[in-house]
View (cartoon, helix red, strand yellow):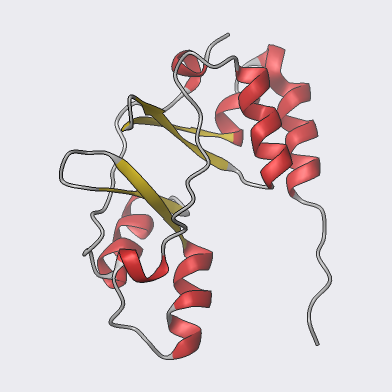
Length: 141
């Protein structure tokens, strides 16, 4: 099965100048933990996670930051024609739960670990990926 068969096709995104307060509101309203960042041509340039907002903005006292200030710019993504197994492997290797889906540089969807788990044939892959993603880290004390 291809990523295009499992991905969410209508995806909310931010632009690099979107204030993090607006991104946080998008996350709350959509009940998601990440928002892709696209330029004016809908080219994917990064992603902002709830963790990015906390670690790169709030914890530094910079609550007036924008997406470009906190986003992860080295975007890890899937393509619509990628096999779902490959996408699950990418999630596991990079310890991420959500993958933007990009075609010709443009955002066309999002794939989450939950999307993989909803299809019976990928339950094991989703479980394996989640297990790899959820490896505990050692807190810095």
